Image (cartoon, rainbow, N blue to C red; front, side, top):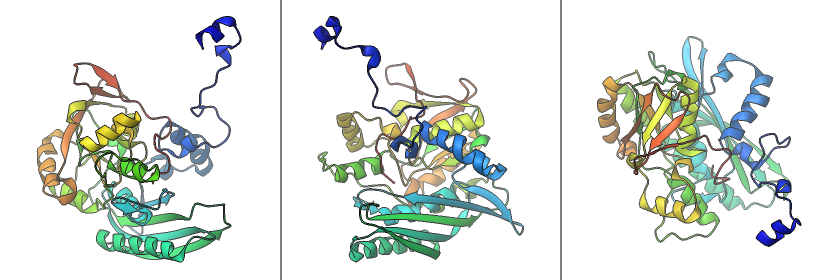
Length: 357
């Protein structure tokens, strides 16, 4: 290659990068990855088109008032491939993902809608298994699937089964949880080991073996949030780090609040199997999706008690402090490394692992 370049037959100026370009005028896979491209799509296309203050908050769920009640309202679509994977399925994700989005506003989830888009030719047994998983997950989360819809597309125009769920829940009085409330001094807590869902899906989709099975962490988090709120209603921010992983969630919070986040890299809980898989594949666990974890920004006066309450709950048994919110480098996330240095943890451009939720 060096000789070819030296001879002038190849012009490096004409090389192209395979990553999606930020000025691309068509939709690319990265637009659905929960990173910078997703944010640009929302900010440049959807937010101007819909134009309202409720949407502009861009939380995991919208906080609205109806008849004097404060409600959280959220919707999400699920296109994961394969439909079933270690630890869960598209059915579990469709319930837990929406329930968790509601819980990140401090709401008590109550009702879900569920819409199926089925590809012509998919087995009814498969559809039934997904529906059964949705029913079981809804019962476990304490919510009711109250309404739904079904559409069928021609063979070759879908991927078996897609599911969309929407949900509503009640926000208790005195609770105001949103990204803009993060403040210097806040203690950053993650509820357990990260990266398990993304690696679990990848392992079965690509037929990879890592020496030990990694199961998805998909689970409802509303009960954990209720336990935290019993300690104090003054939780500043909650976020479930799904697409784009912990890195995307923290960057969104830092930018929304105009504060900096400083992590201790050695304190971030990454299971050995996830670390080994990511090392083998050249991935950063901070960018790998989770489906049963939350990150919390808690005022320092309440941090120890909230952490204790989290560890007493099954979904928070592995909770640890991973950093703090700081006045330095506003809008930026950095991590102190084990070598004594500091690295920037930037917003991902797209998604390392497509089709994981």
